[in-house]
Image (cartoon, rainbow over all chains, first blue to last red; front, top):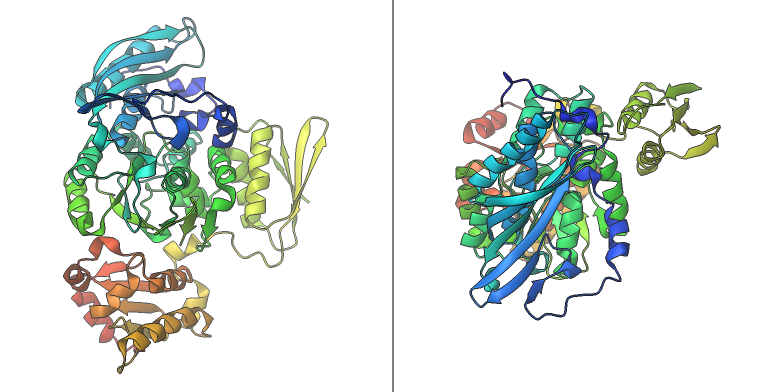
Length: 349
Length: 204
């Protein structure tokens, strides 16, 4: 982090940030309900299964994964915001088992009122993360608007037979989560001076961390069902996967990795509104066996650039966890199990 | 009535203030939260509802007002205390440790033993005196494995403030280190220390 350099504080421009800025899932579902569906047989994945990206088959060996994501600032430093926004956008390609290779910047930035250097720093941050992901940024598009918003449209490649989707969970698999959750809570708390610098810095580091290594592990163990945890929270995304895969999912509260201070902050009532929207969205599909309210609300917390959640056969669990940890994904853990069948229900023990 | 002024505060600050007010209140206290942000108001109402508190919402000259009474049966909405201190229920009854050294209860028939063990663990929350800790070793660690019915029972016991310790060598031996639904992995030094501590141990 370049603390020595002065930068424009992006957090002064926004009331809500990150994926909390998303339209609530329940509202979005209604909007998308009557949209015409693609009829091209080369479309392997579209909005039907609520996946992270669209997938289009070019030939038997190659399909393109196409995705976009952008949002208002979630941190003060423009360079870091660029890094996080890029990691978040690229993540959708990794979540579907692909390798990103090119991208476009999508930006809104006011031509007056904020030093334009801040925009340059956002783009530099994004470029540095894209480079780590072996992704070339070919250009982009900027609209004069305030507050700033930034993200990428990303294209990745994948073998059509190896696409990882929400619908690919198999009965009795175990579920691995590769990053700790609670980033929405920590970033909200930071703005009110409630989170320590240490917890905040760690949260930023996790948000900047690419999901490339997690994707490598998914590919190695031929994972078929997976997603990344973003705006709909752990429960929201788990529910989407369970529903698309026609299974139920058990999640064990004692095993879900939290960011430092997230629990204490939830206890203090620092629960951003997005968590309540996600709770509303899931409704009756969540069955609570644990009475820990704070744990529940952290699992509803909207994440920015969260980790991967995927199903894996029991015999590969130890190798997968060891591999993830050796890559520095130190919080990686089995957090639950896929039921033999079901209707998208989440059982929280 | 205590009035919490949340006018002009951004989400989730009003919720934090409400939470603080509840924490500092006694049963039967009336609390009024004044807000001017619709989203924050909705979140506060949902938080109260989630925690079984009836609230009344009114609009008054552009102000959103939420009134509620802290219920008499209101313990704590959450259990953060479990993470930093031993809850009183356990503290008062910390007279014994349960040892689970097998996945079955008793000798004779293992299928029957499994049923008995499940029944035993499901019954523990009903006991007048909870154990201070449950230590699992050998086949006992399998009881804490994800997917086992008994793991859910152990989680429930754990949520009542009972520590669950699981033998590290044993979970490695059975290859279930990454598949535990509940329990802290511990070593022989810890387990031997507990067994030798003079605390009463109970084996089902």
